[in-house]
Length: 167
Image 1 (cartoon, rainbow, N blue to C red):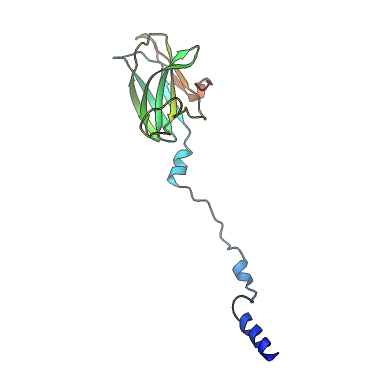
Image 2 (cartoon, rainbow, N blue to C red; image 1 turned 90 degrees about the horizontal axis):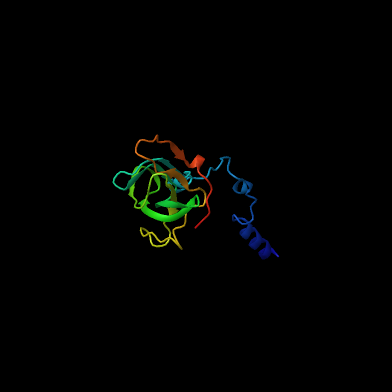
């Protein structure tokens, strides 16, 4: 019996049998989630600012693109007031870019064009739409009108963009 008591005392003298309530209490500090740079950039709302404009040397200008990820700025010609034929695309980096110029052909005054951000998902740096590099889900295409040279230009942003269907 004495040997059994000694074994129990010996085993319980370690940390296994003590009631260490302090070790089970949560700390008094509040843990805040860490926001990494990538999470911050992904929280950027996508935005395109483009003006009604006339062609100069078959080139259009997009004033500003705000993209939450690397992707593509894609210019569409309108078919029934929705994005139709792709006229051109250019690779864009996540973040904000200004004054992006793209060549387009076969565009006349009065034509409606659309600007839209697409993802870059399959082979990075290669535009593969369709079936990959789909338009961003959380934004609509931004329409703008090709004007005569002397017409007044107006800003059109995503806030006035019309919803479109995925192609």
